[in-house]
Amino acid sequence: MSETHETHLDLQRECDHIVDRALAGENAFVQMGCLLFLAFSNGDAFALDLDDKFACPLCLEGEKQICPLVDTGEQWAFHWPWSYYVARGRIHFETTDEGDPVAMQLAVGTIQRKVHDYNRKAGTNSISESHSRLEARPAPLVRVIPPPACLTGF
Image (cartoon, rainbow, N blue to C red):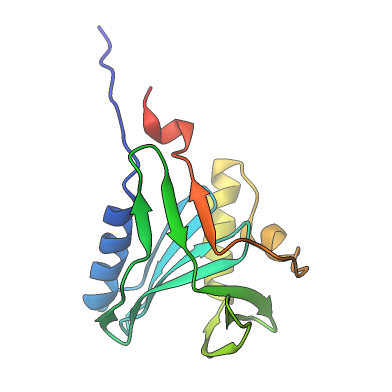
């Protein structure tokens, strides 16, 4: 007899988890489809949208940031205050409202290798392929994220 398990996407819990890891001084990353959650031992944590190149600081220098996440019950909406691009081995951030640079950069080499290895094992696209499409294009500040089918039930 087989059991049926139902899994629900809880982005707020994922944000809280990655912030907790950063506050504990741990390096970690979690990838959920096009979303990448990063924690750094210095107390920084971020959410990145790999497809549309948006970023959200979740924790900066050990201080938890307001998470601009809305759950409508059927969909999630993320307000992305930053966009990002990759150049010369670093992730560079810009504000989404004015396009002004943010005085912060992340080294991307280790992140790329870990995500590439994960995606290779999972048989999906790698972050380096995603980052090779760095063309500028207008995008909405709020992106609606429906729960992936693989996380909504079996």
